[in-house]
Image (cartoon, rainbow, N blue to C red; front, side, top):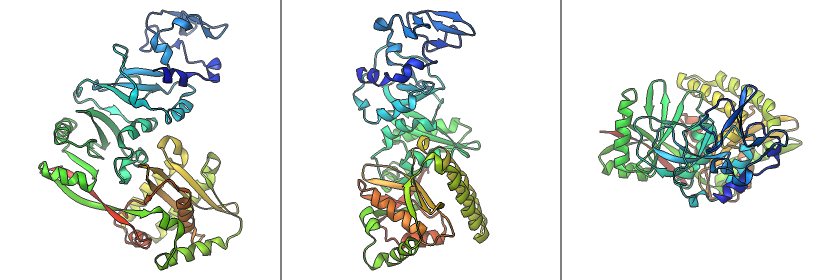
Length: 426
C-alpha cells in the first residue's frame, strides 16, 4: 500500500476542500478512531486544523486517511472487496493516469479494512472474493475503464474487448458488472431486458450457468452472451450451449495500411494523393478545442448520409452513430478513446477515434469524413496507422449488413476476418 500512499501526495492537497469534511455526523468514510465536530452546515474531523489547513494527527492518522482518496470497500453486490478511488477527490484524474504505470497485482488485502461502497467510488482491483452476493449488480461507470481493462486487455482482438465499445452506448444501454467464481461478468440492460454483452472472463460453464440463473431473476431475462470469439464459441458448444456466428470483424496488418504499397492498395493510394492536393493539411491529436468544429462536421456528414439512405435499418444505424459520436466528442478521455483530427486549412475534413484492445491491436471505433473532401477518409486512416507503430494489427470492426461499407473494408485486403458469435442456452 506504500506505493498508493505516495500517489496520493500532491500540491493541490493544500487547497483541498473535500478531505476531512463531511455532510453528516456518521458518514461511511469517517476515519476510524476519530470524532467529527459540527462546523457550520458540515462536520469536520477533530484532528483537522482549519486555520493551518493540516492534520494535527498526521503522523498517527488512521489507515483510511493514509490511503485516501483510495479506499478498501465492499462492492455494491457484496461479492468482493475492492480497491477503489473516490472521484470526489479533485486530484482523482491525475492519480488515475499515474496508476497506469503502477502494478496493482501485488496489492494485498488489508484484513478488516473494508467499508461500504459509495456512489462516488471508482473500482480499480478486486482484493478479495467473498461469494456471489445474490442478484445485486454493480454499476459500470465511464470512470471504471481502468478496472475493466484489468480483466479484458490482451485477451483477444475483438472490438468488444475494448472498454469504449460498451461505454459509447450509454445513451441507450445501462451496464453492470459482477465477479462470479472469480470471473468478470459484464451485464447490459436495454429497456427491461438484461443480457451479457460479453461472455464471462475467464469463460467457464459453471459461471455461465450461474449467470443464466441470475438473468432469469432479473425481469425473467434468458441467457445470451454476445461478442464471443470463435475459440470461446467452440468451448461453449462442447459445454452444451448454442453458439451462432452473427457477424465478422476486419483485422489488418498495420504496416500494410501505413505503406499502401502494391496493386492491392492502388485505389487507396490514389485517393490519398487526391486529398493531399488540398493546401494547409494538418493531422493532430483531438482536443477540447476541436469539439465545435468536429460536431458541426458530424452534422454535415449525418445529413449527407440521410439524403442517400433508402432503408429504415440504415437510418436507425445512422441515428445510433450520431449519438455515439456526440458522446465520443464530448468525453473521449472518460470513454478511453484516442482521437485524431484532419483539417484542410481551418475546415475539419475528417476525425477518428479508437483505442488499444491489446498490446498489439488497436481498434478504430469511429471514422467520420466531410463529404466535401474526397480521399479524406483514406488519408486519415493511413496517417493513424503510421502513428501506431507499437501495434501489429488494426481492427476496423464489422459492416452492420451495409454492403457499401463491407465493400470498402474488403478493398483494404484484411489479414483475417474475425468471427463474432452469440452464445445461448439450447
